[in-house]
Amino acid sequence: MTFRSLPMLLGAAALATQLAACDRQPARAEAPLRMVKLITTSTTAAADYRFVALVRQARRADLSFENGGKLAGVMVDVGDTVRRGQVLATLDPEPAHLQVLQAEAQVRSTAGQLQERRDQLRQQQAMHADGATSKLTLDAAQLAVTMADAAHSSANAALQLASRAQRQGVLRAPYAGRIKARLAEPGALAASGQAVLQIEGDSHLQVVADLPAALLPASLKPGAVVVARGADQATAGSDAADAIKLTLRSLADHIDAGGTVQAIFDLQPGQTPRRSGEALSIAIASGAPQIATLPLTAVAQSTKAGTGHVFVYHRTGNVLERRAVVLGRQRGDSIDVTQGLRPGEEVAGAGTAFLIDRQRVVPYHSASTLATGEQP
Image (tube, rainbow, N blue to C red; front, top):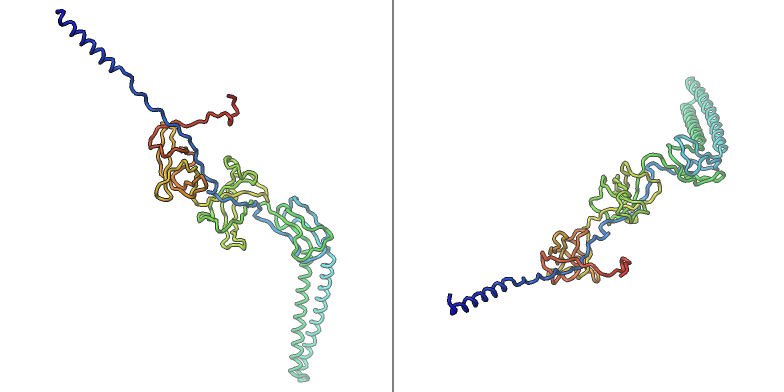
């Protein structure tokens, strides 16, 4: 190698070194992920109708006397347990006893008159056979017997009624149960049919509700199952243990004056024991779709009325899904979404015009410590 070729070799080595350095330049840094604020969707409570219902015994009655009178005694009080046929209250027995005596005397009187008319008829029959009396006289005697017999029968019926009234002066329990109310006290005058006591049987319980006819869904038919809660638990919807399952027994086929329809439900077996008179809150599905409400900034509205799209966030992969939705009423800065979203899904709360489908993002978390009470 000569001195003349040496500079050429050094120049080639320097050029190769520069080219290798260019290949080792760092790659362009990846753009940072967009940060989005997320909103969790939830359906409104308007999907169910709630009505107040009352627990009652299937067997119940207002007890009264068939005939009025003065109360001689009331042997039971509210809450007492009674057996079938037990004496609960009595009327003053003297008026009924006197009516029986009067009816018995009338029976004896009419029996004597009937016997007298029969004797006279036999006389007239004998005289008519001898030709000593006319046919008209015989017919009159026969008519007198018929009338006396009718009077005697009427007196016997009056005696039976008086005896019945005497027996009905004692009020007895029609079946085993419990006294619900005591409405009269001894010494008071009880009119015929006036309630003196209220009794409830010890059979199964029912739940009764007056439901607005205009709000009843077509699916509410006998056999349908609905969920109820105690009046003090009506807002505790998250605790399934408090739910009371009811089966619709019957639904009235007529509408009351107030525009309501009476529905009777049976408690399903195995439910927590309820007390008669307890109020329940019944939830009946309205049949309408569930509605979610989102801020306007979370929805990109289309040119076609009632449609638009949102960006649903998927934590697996931290990506956004562009999803078409059906829109409802606008309420100030919010709008109803009637179709396209499920409860619990998270959507981007703003910036929909700058987002795209399948875009990777980072959820925004506020740095404020006011909500948690932490010290900076």
